[in-house]
Length: 274
Length: 266
Image (tube, rainbow over the protein chains, first blue to last red):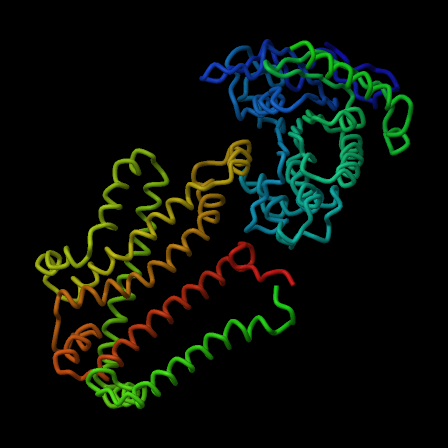
């Protein structure tokens, strides 16, 4: 399972030997009370510094998987460990999780600044510290001048940036993203993918990303988990062993096309097998 | 929406004013042409005369009706909001008591006001109780609905950030419920006035503490139809002013974010 290599291909992240994975799933399964098998047993470990993408068709349980990692849903079987411990470990010693949802999910009555500051307010962070963190987070997503705007005054892409800034404001040790750009147009999505990749590199983030876009998965990830639906399960793990930073040239390269073909064949095979 | 800038305001204010003028002119003309008696249908001029002549009497009654209306509206708002909070905090409480809140709504106030007049010694207090009962339901139901209508995504966000119950209430539920709450207030303001007038008809107060409903009854008995019309006019104007005040309040509170209060885009 250990995909993170110490090669030049992946940026210099060398987790201390023996350090537990950020999150580790052991035979985690989800069956709904009505008997629907949303997710068959999954084994998965995400290490610090990785960008892991879960790729699969609608209804394959990829969002459920992410929700369980976020602690928003409990697995019906199996075990999840965060930093080698139970969910209690989350939130302690800077080991925070943050999630970006399919929609921007901003509070319409609150300005951009208030929305981004929310996680800090809820954690009762001191005001001046919080305001500095908000300014830094807004700068990261390129929204410096928009702190006093209301969400409705922003485009869909900008609202999503606010959502990302809100997730980054706590310096999360693990950033969960559930099809964050799915509702955006292709051009905006490509632009935000590029910015996200840059952010991940510059801020040494650890990201678990869910998408049904093959291109997005190849462009962003260090590793892709291909899922099939009914019942949801991981059919294959594909490392995307390409150097960072990745730019538009990468999107049109032979290697990019090759990875896309691999993933698309895996997805097709998985859906045929049903 | 509007073809030219500025037309919106003209249409919104000018058109209803024009309709009003035409109706009053037609009313005046019909009364004059048909020669119908003042006792049956007074002309607008007769009503205006009555309004000026009896202003001392009518304005005193207007103040009493307004006082009862506002007191009832205030009670309905405060009590209704408190009840809604109790409902929103616990499904058990809501399931147990909501049917009885509906009971308040569907029972005609005319049918229960004699009881309240018997139970509550002070007449004005009795009238306030009646009007409150009429006005409280929309506040309860709208505010409860609002407090429950939390965006599931935001609810998850609050959970992930380990928000306490109080934090979720103050930062998520209450702001989210505000548009529903103000919608409830708009309905309740009108109902409080209706409740105050209807209750007075039934309770039959008189003398010094008489509101507009009493003046209408008296004017009817004495065949002073112009005065009856004048009192009616005052009730209507009071209702409209109350409603406009609620619209203004709602815009003040929500204007910066909620769809219902935003100006349409060019």
